[in-house]
Image 1 (cartoon, rainbow, N blue to C red):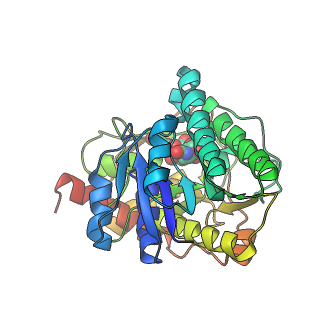
Image 2 (cartoon, rainbow, N blue to C red; image 1 turned 60 degrees about the horizontal axis):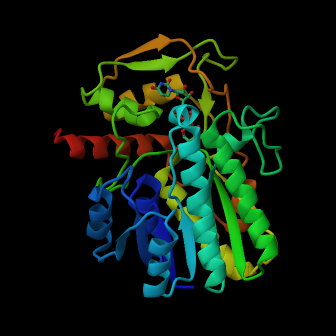
Amino acid sequence: MKTILITGGAGFIGSHTAVELIQAGYEVIVADNLSNADTTCLEGVEKITRKKIPFHKADCCDKRQLKKIFEEHAIDGAIHFAGYKAVGESVYKPLMYYHNNLTSFMTLLEIMVENGGGNVVFSSSATVYGQPDILPVTEETPRKPAASPYGNTKQICEDILADAVRAHPTLKGIILRYFNPIGAHASAMIGELPRGVPNNLVPFITQTAAGIREELQIYGNDYNTPDGTALRDYIDVVDLAAAHVSALKHMVRTDRTGSCDIFNVGTGKPISVMELVNKFQAVNKVPVKYRITGRREGDVEAVWADTSLANTVLGWKAACSVEQTLEKAWAWEKRLRGIK
Ligand code: WQD
């Protein structure tokens, strides 16, 4: 397998995955409608890899546009990142979320089936576990009813892929459930580029350190955790990107039909919000003004991964320490803002 289509490849995780795939010897084609990204990261990918990336400004919901890409390139597999991802916004705009996230994925799968199948990696999320009863979560941990339309689209897309793979033997699928992806490439050429006010913790920290936001709000210190703040499993985005390379290799190696494997992609180590903020300040020697406020609606108290399956079956393991990841996140923000 050689040529991989990355939908949403101009985005945060997509662009890092493009780098890892190219460096592993794959040809990469990027499709992105640039609805929540611009070409900054694609240019960064080209600088890092010194390769020109075939880029199609295309909306995956539009079958004609997507089909054209398959006609132009001999695509062996696809990694599907294209989708809306703001949990809060999905509550206010559920139809937009269901329409975009489900249609884009179904369109991709339809075209792949029509073109003789291939390997598909779907970007799912730890959000499918909700607040698990037992921690850490394994892939066998039951999914909880989704707390948001965004989370529901992840669950439904997992089911769509499982059903499609069952019905179409030429189609092979893997589901990767990401925990909390953070950080940036070590070159500081690519990283997270949130539009407007960041929803996620690390971009909010880096923007506060850069003076763009006045202060970070820490959402709740009354959780049943060692320091009262919520626990998450923060996974370095380059490690996460590497998991996609391992997943594609695993699919080729096992040539499994009829069912799709699911893997947790995290570090296996819980870190509290407070710990993360303190580590960021310590490793980067930069202050982050913060204030403890009330809990954010919809947040779970604690979730982290049991990563044994990915470790043993995919031969993948998170390599980067959280300190290194936070250094890279700050280096990227500084480069973006011209801070010395
Ligand atoms: C982490 C922790 C917050 C911001 C979500 C999605 C998930 C995935 C990643 C998206 C929580 C706290 C945050 C802030 C804070 N998908 N926090 N102040 O909510 O675990 O996961 O994003 O693409 O599917 O659900 O990530 O980074 O928003 O929050 O105190 O300003 O940081 O309460 O405990 P989350 P997050």
